[in-house]
Length: 140
Figure 1 (cartoon, helix red, strand yellow):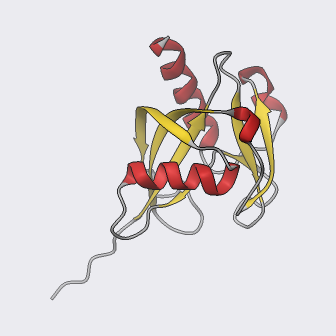
Figure 2 (cartoon, one colour):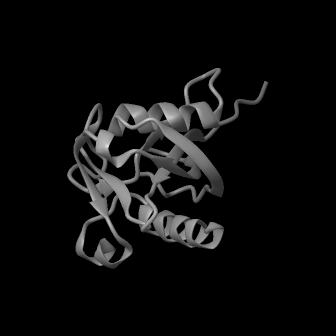
């Protein structure tokens, strides 16, 4: 029998407000320790990607989110130094007043598109953020 190597499945969540400000977390752990990233993480066995997105948002930001749109699937084999991961990205709304860094998040912050060039962003999240901004703006 042939063994198959299977990529890991993750989800990333772009939580935004009515002014298109969005939340990023500062990573507590490697890879990309101390870099800013979208809230997100690995989908657990037996869990839907949508459920994982809501769970990961809550675990990392303390915010209960409502998923709005599926943005895209990002699957470049070298996007994560830990190995081949495929992420499913969503836009979401939630109450920013509830935000608090939790779980793998060292810090949490609210950002706008203009500030992206001033911070270190993990993985390929700069591309995902730009795609999410475009989708969120087109939806309103």
